[in-house]
Amino acid sequence: MTLVDKDRQLLSLLSENARMPTAEIARRLGLSRTTVQTKIERLERDGVITGYGVRLSEDFERGIVRAHLLITLAPKALGRVTPALAAIREVQTLHSVSGSFDLIAIVAATSISELDGIIDRIGDLDGVERTLSSIILSTRIDR
Image 1: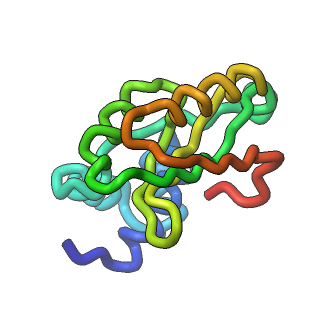
Image 2: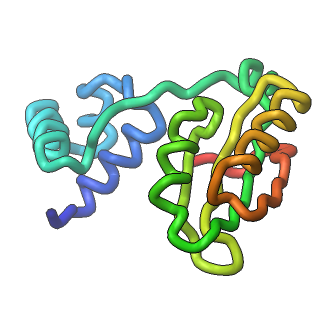
């Protein structure tokens, strides 16, 4: 699907606030409310928009400890490690990457000790050869 500039602007506005009223989006884009609604429906139908999310408050986020966990796998272990990581609810995101590591997991916990246990649990998975963790101290840009 090819996106025009107004589609990209619409997606940007929805990324900032998915609950923004259609009339407000239309005003900001200089389009009619009907046109905006039609664009949103098309983007959903075409699979560009697959869902809407919740942004948590900074106060709530301060109580969560997050880390990037770089993971090196044994050869041919991706097929069994990925489902095992998916079963760990604290693993929020998992990326395949190039370089000296095979995966990067974003892990969230309520405390450093809980995070430590999760990292140990991941390190003990069959097929995980090595992990390297970096605790996120602050987020400077979040789009």
